[in-house]
Image 1 (tube, rainbow, N blue to C red):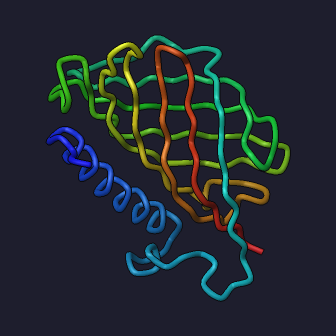
Image 2: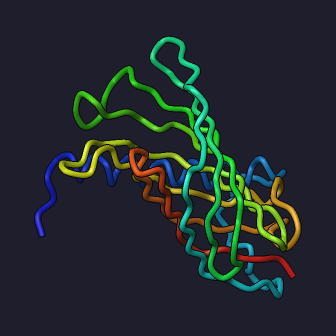
Length: 183
């Protein structure tokens, strides 16, 4: 399958964003750059869990914009497999100054998604692109890294990464990936 230049550019941006988010989360937790790259289950008795969320936005506050950069806040409900029903809040920072994939596109520089389950709160840091999709509206493709330092309950100390696909016009998001939980 041949990829167009837009798809190649998006994959490169998402790969770089993933490395940056993973590294920043490790450093924010008090580690070094080398430690940020080491899996959390490297000989510690931890275990890895596949997660898959289906989230629906219930309310979005009006965006606060300055100089083409907007901060958007929303919240809603959904499910996080294998943990069941969840509530969530999201803070999104998006930059409209240099559209990466068409006039209505934007860089989604930072997403902080806080997902609350009955077993703890999972904090994800995300980055990606919002590009128009014919017949669907805008689509956000992002990568995420778990923030074990700010997460609570069973998610405290967790590491992991994954991807997220969101459709703002449909008020949905679907993060998926792997988490490594501390013992």
